[in-house]
Image 1: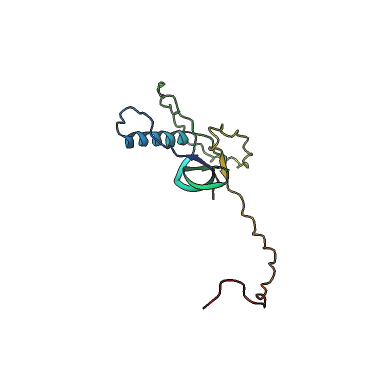
Image 2: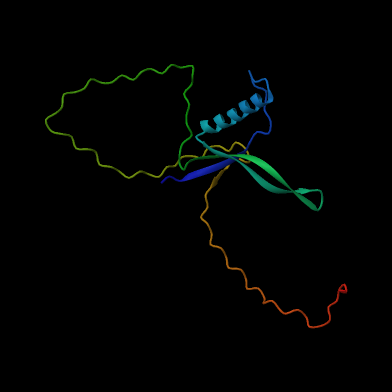
Length: 164
């Protein structure tokens, strides 16, 4: 089973100008496509879009709830970002050596060595919201402090509006 690291970035709020995009929805789609392709080039796999509430200050004393559109990405832990080849240089086809005649004694396979730990550097941070979020182990819920027992109402006259 693979372990993943996650990153969440804010979704584009509006479309930017793009060649061939004339309407607002076309510009927005082009902007979203660029954001998804940029993350894919860095090795991130798109998971989903989320709309999450956040409580923010409004004025001195009040608070309001705002909703943020976020894009969630993941990649396998320890994965290197995908390296793209330059488009200008053609790739030459590899040449294969001629096949040698089989020898009389079969060769022994090489012994399998354990993999050494990777010392790969993490990918550079793009923006404040693009740092990976790693899954944390769930902490056990703490037991609540014992609350005092409920007491009976006072045995005196009821103070309040009179009943008719």
